[in-house]
Structure formats: C-alpha cells, structure tokens
Image (cartoon, rainbow, N blue to C red; front, side, top):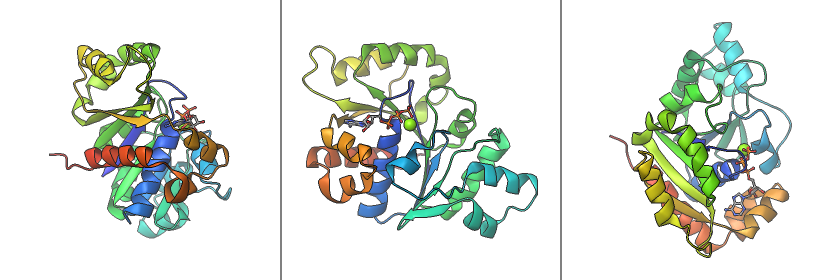
Length: 244
Ligand SMILES: Nc1ncnc2c1ncn2[C@@H]1O[C@H](COP(=O)(O)OP(=O)(O)OP(=O)(O)O)[C@@H](O)[C@H]1O
Ligand SMILES: [Mg+2]
C-alpha cells in the first residue's frame, strides 16, 4: 500500500508521526517499509540518526531520464536500509517531481515493499501533489488548534478530491483543552465536506525528548508510553484496512 502523510500547515508533528508509524510497522509487525522524504529539509534522516549518504528521488529521476532504471539500479541507487527492514529514499533537491516520476516511483516501491510511506510537504506543494493521486491512503496530521482548520478550509476544494482515502489524525491531543475536543473537530471537518475517520495521538513529552535525541527508534522499542503506542496501533489498523 502507498500511504501519504500530509498536513495543512508546518509543525504539526507530521514527520515524527510518519516515522513512528514506520518504525512500529517494521519493528513490531515485521513488515518491510520504504519511508520516503519529500521534504528537502531531510528531517527523517535526522530523527533516525542516520548516515549522510543520500539515496534520493534525484537519483531516481536521473535513472528515469537516462533510461537506466530497473529493479537492480532501484535497489542500489534509490533506497538504503537504515534500520533492519526499514529502507528510505531521501528528498529530491534538484529534480521537480512530475506525474510520471511519481507514478513510476510508486510502482517500483509498491512492488518491492509491503508499504511505502511518503512524508509529503504541508499543504499543496508542487513536489508532493503528484504523489497524492497514487496514494491508497492519505493521512492528514492536524493539531488541536482552531486556526489550523482555517488552513484546511482554504485547501478544502483540494482535499475533497481525496476524501475517500483521507484519514485525519489529531496529533499532540489532550482531553484537557476545554471546549475543543475530537467531537468539535470532527464536526468542523464534516461541515467542510470531509466526513472522514478522525483519530488521535496523545501529547507525549517522551516524543519530544526522543526526537531531540534523534532516536525515535528507542521510543518504539523502549521508552514510548503505552497510551501512545496503543493509539498508534489504532491509526495503523484503520490505515491498513483494505481499500475497495
Ligand atoms: N504526539 C506528540 N506529542 C508531543 N510532541 C510531539 C508529538 N508529535 C510530534 N511532536 C513534536 O513536534 C515537533 C515537530 O515535529 P515534526 O518535525 O514531526 O513536525 P513537522 O510537522 O514534520 O514539521 P515541518 O512541517 O516543519 O516538517 C517535534 O519537536 C516533535 O517531537
Ligand atoms: Mg516534517
């Protein structure tokens, strides 16, 4: 399955959520995942404390344009294993992602991995939009912030195209924020024409600690609190429900 993570704004925790979801699927469910960074800041590498050797979407675009792409060159030049069973492809720095490149990339990655998880850029950025069409599911990460939904409203027409495969995750969620909980957010989304599954991931200081230490792997294997891991499992079970 191809799963795209997106957000109406920067800073919602989208990359950390995509990375923790990937680690949970790899380390706890023994699946092979390709985690793809579409954001040129290359923050996934940082969170996984990885080597600087990049295998990126630029290499992929180059292989396509020189007609040198096959399964062998894809494995050697486009992906690298960063945790056993967890591969990644870094963001493009030079090439612009076209519809054809996005289609071909998701074909290759889709064939080689159980799941491909794309960390797209917030909003409707041009390198990300070609991927949404090829995604089986899109996870929109938001926070419990009224202003954030005004950005969803601005992008409403755009998100509506994908509402059949959209799931909303309210990240850094707390029951203590009075008068603006999951029911209110669900209703506002519905009023915007987005009657989609809405799930939550709790506000968890340990997430900040482990991401500052660039060691999200140990959050999954050791330090992550049960309420976060359980909520993450609910998100993953919802996501991996087969699409018709
Ligand atoms: N559930 C959570 N609880 C507490 N803090 C969190 C949670 N999820 C993410 N964070 C924190 O939020 C901050 C931003 O996370 P992240 O880098 O994933 O944001 P982003 O949405 O990818 O940002 P950008 O749009 O700039 O790429 C980090 O410090 C991270 O540790
Ligand atoms: Mg990010």
